[in-house]
Image 1: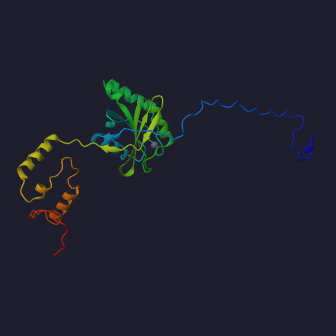
Image 2 (image 1 turned 60 degrees about the horizontal axis):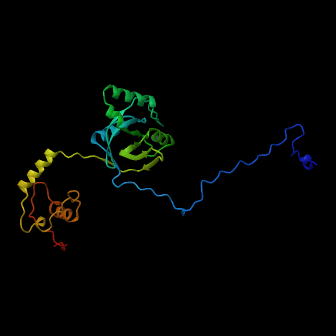
Image 3 (image 1 turned 45 degrees about the vertical axis):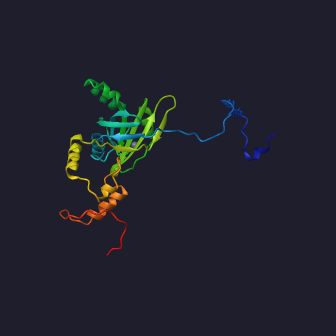
Length: 264
Ligand SMILES: [Zn+2]
């Protein structure tokens, strides 16, 4: 019986019969869950950070801001605990595109070859950072960037993306049996104090700063390891009141900081 002949819904006899779609076998379950279902948790060590040496910082932004095209460079990384110190970068030969630059494996290969030729095998082993720029686009990871990070992360890889106004973003990709990514890793630029200069400042303080009765420093000794010079309440207050209104060549009588008084 062909009830729908009128509508032409059914195939004519000359067409092949419809093959029934037999449902595939379902996936056999891996097991029966015996734990409560929770969101997965992951812990990262305290102090996880990317540290750029002054040289690396200047190279990175120097390269990035020298062109309005995207650039890629590879960094030499030294690990100190959970701090990843990028010591310097090597700019690889590349064709910069305004939209996207992939890390060219051939160019990377030739960089490695050059370094090996110069007897810098350790330097090659320490190339664990890929940095690139996003001129005028902000700091984010594109699909291509993700792929590149995963591809270059053997044991681990630090990736950096920079954009206008010294914007920077860092991530850590860890390889191995369960690859994972930690994004938004803090970045700092290393400050290497000049020991000689610090010694001179110490001598200057020893010569000029004497303890005297009635001075705030006698009453409230500045704690060891206090932060910046004027970022602690008592001192910034003292500094502001005592020196904030003076010209360079004027002097003030040092006075203990008292509670707020009515002006005049
Ligand atoms: Zn990108």
